[in-house]
Amino acid sequence: MENVLLIVHLILALCLIGVVLLQRSEGGGLGIGGGGGAMTGRTPITPLGKLTWVFAVAFICTSIALTIVAAQNSANSSVLDRLRDAPTSQQPADGLLPPPVPSGDSLLPPSTGDAPALPPRAE
Image 1 (cartoon, rainbow, N blue to C red):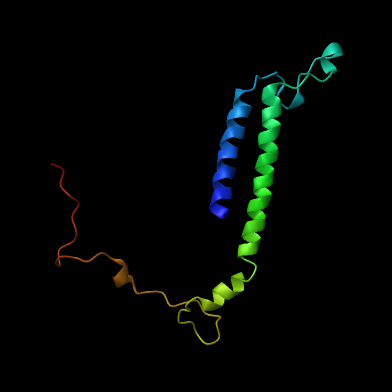
Image 2: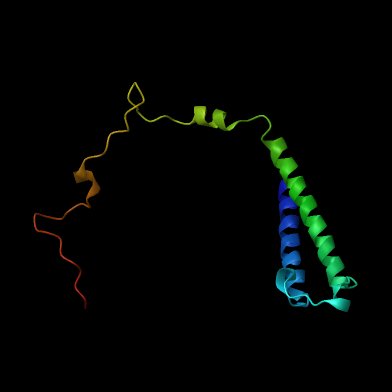
């Protein structure tokens, strides 16, 4: 059920992006630069505008449905339960000191001999 909702949600997101990109720009992004007089009235809604509203409402509904499904799936568990079940590393008894740092020798790559490493030759 959750996978089906997620797929529908993704398809709606792509459709919503496509429909918004197909709409004709009326200039004045964010309402800036609108003219006065007869231009102040609302314009009739276009079919693409209606389709945008339908996709937006469906997108919000699937978002809410996915949130409800996720809440039901995690109703009986807690993040703290998962932390308690996790394997613990060896910590000092007081828990105030950081874990020991590995020695510097283990951080270096293995060497083939006593000679220093040379950069590879360009051929």
